[in-house]
Length: 325
Image (cartoon, rainbow, N blue to C red; front, side, top):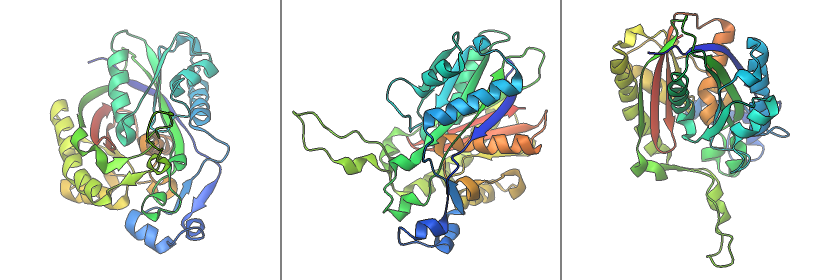
């Protein structure tokens, strides 16, 4: 296995904080109703920020922390389902903004599993050359995909970005130990967003409502409860490890009830599944790196710890990547 050393992490979130009480002013809901069903207290909502601007801020911070010349970057990868443009890719805009002229840059869209998928992809790319390095960012402005009159979805999501700078350092013991990545396309209609309306003069009348999040919450909940523990166990088998070998599970922050149910099903202590959904809500591809950045900053993840990045969501998809940090 090649080295996969996380050199630094960083995050960027919108300055505007929207509380549950704020939402109660514009829809039929309450702080108690939202907390009881989701565990969310507040979320950051973009006003003058964008998926691109937050990604650029994260990338600049990563370069500053590591003192790596942007021209030495080999890859810039952004996981997002809410890019500002269909083209250029968000990653291409980041590459241009930071002066990473030698880096290959591209986006991936695996919704809430995007950062886990991106970790696997970047690991494979970096393995090609010793000393190579790249930036992986998860970034979302999901607020532009929300119907703010629909409390079943509008209360769940937030905006933000976070990422890591990773190097294939042959002197390091840090590496990806195992993974499990799955797509269940037959279940894709359970969670949709961003449908392009037919606006040609030759097509049917556009249905603009399809751009908003639509979710079968019951189906997604049951999917997560069944498939996420299986994903974790498959990745552990791939890594030849057991559940007790993992120090921290960095799990997608979709819903506090889902996380608690997965923890119970695995029979593990809750403290190995840290939660920040109360602060950020569900930020899709930004969810895992936001939590990871906070855990690294607080020192709750140390060198030598084994961590599991666990994603699940739109597609439908699951992804678990085991890393020796």
